[in-house]
Image 1 (cartoon, one colour):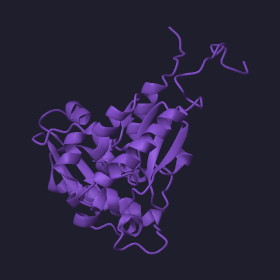
Image 2 (tube, rainbow, N blue to C red):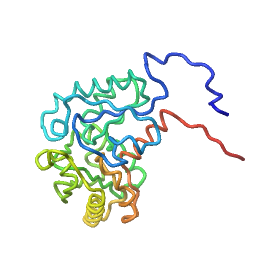
Image 3 (spheres, helix red, strand yellow):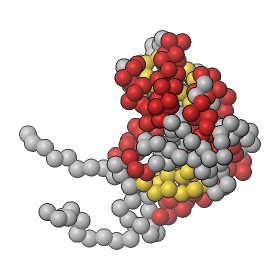
Image 4 (spheres, helix red, strand yellow):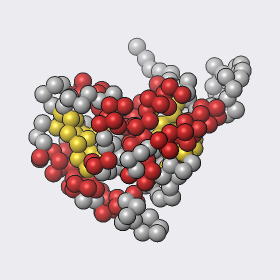
Length: 259
């Protein structure tokens, strides 16, 4: 069989210009690299990825600036462009895009996954009320109650937050995302990043023994999720688990087996 025999007829879907699409991901208007597993690196994903830059929205304006109003329209424009192209769902490359989850979901007609933080209420249900979700973000000082609430997180529920850069120290992330510290050409080493992430996760768990699962909020952390899991023997959630779930929901697979 050289083609899917179930595909015998086609017609235009809404006003979409492209077909066979997967997840549309809006990325920051910021030049820095990502290891395979980072959302801005397309090479490691097992489904089609389409990128759209949110023009003028960089790491500083989205994360550092207190007034995020200027980010709203470029983000909505990027979402609409991805939808019009034919993407089945929309995601973003940074956990701090959670600030605009409700805005984007209201603006387009396809499912929206603006932050890995959307998984937190789900994780809480899976680990029970006596355990907490350990959220590791890039910089804790910038993760506000608005981000959490817009991702559906109850502020009075069981979770702890750790800032990899501003609390525990992660120089390899500073050279990518900290506009005050990174070099003119952002750079990072994988091995050093992995060591830092393992150390951070272990210290975080020691500080909060009730942690029953880890949620990696940052787009650049999931390349190290498996290494963290080997050390902590806990469920690890990330952008990777979110995007896999998102794609499985909007492009459902067939099942083949036997009885």
